[in-house]
Image (cartoon, rainbow, N blue to C red; front, side):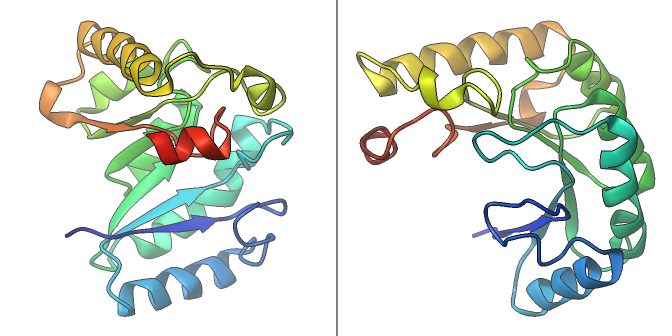
Length: 186
């Protein structure tokens, strides 16, 4: 079993209330998770909660890159949670090994090509729309079938962009453009 720990370096995280939004606090939290058995640290610098405002790539990178640089020799695998290709590239260059994209390449036209050039594992998550509109897009006739169909389309585009099949990891996106009953059904 592989365990991923989530580390949000944002002031408005829905998961931890922004408790780790400084480099020192974030690094200490990551080291604690590693000591507790976490294998992968997923570091995000932009909140993906419903209604969250987008941040610039520069702002996102100022939050995550110092943390990645301090953790790259920790023994844990580092994942960058980003929708922005430039942040993905900078994070991999700083020591991250995985790109985790909650938009599956839909938020940034350069993401899939960038990941293909980086040659790293890529987590493509299902969602609909952006943080401002995802709640209104949680309408499905058959949630499992529709999520599978939409993810298959993203996989095909990722493959066509040059991402290796064995580098693709698929996430059904529980809680993203889904209501509670959809999450249970998935």
